Image (cartoon, rainbow, N blue to C red; front, side):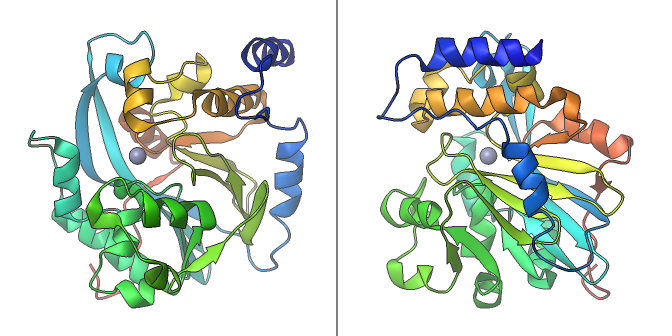
Length: 303
Ligand SMILES: [Zn+2]
């Protein structure tokens, strides 16, 4: 049933190739990603923590096509994949100056102590990846008192660097070619294993450098950190993009995003935990269910 739906939506959405290429995901992608998760030897991760360091207050109408005027709380988050002997961070938080940029004049919640914990977790991590090059996900590795040490273990993709260098979302997160050399800059075609149980999956659309992060824990649970492909789970389950004004404001590629939503939707019977970065209600539920730890683990002395 899902496969039929998927085929129908693909046919409807991609009958006319956009930018000279069809952006649908191959049917065997998840299988290949699962295999790639075994490529890097070492003990698999055991748990995943998250932290909410800020909020943005919107309406459903602003975040999903056809949404109501009911309030929607967007959580700004970072995630910590915990290994027996180390950790990997997904996304990096942001300082208060970058937070204020997103307020557009409104005063929105920001917890400096929680962002300090994100910074401490970045300093303690063995490896750092970011879902994409927007300030609320990447600023913590660009603007930090521990920036040099953090940069030396932070992976940026060529596409992310290109945006940060030539068209940063805000001037505060712009970087020079020279500064880019301090990071672990990579490029890949479709997916890239980076640590035991962790695979990056290319997903340009929300931004040119957007990627999804696959994580498989030791006991077998699988997660897909879908970043901002959708701001809430209903984008995936209802195959709905953000509203047209929001797509235009961000400069998104709606065809590419729909292909990603279709792929994620097609995985509904695979038992994966889908984690949209900003879906506050869903993340709280995951924490209540024990799927995500509700705070970051820090070395003694950083608490
Ligand atoms: Zn975001």
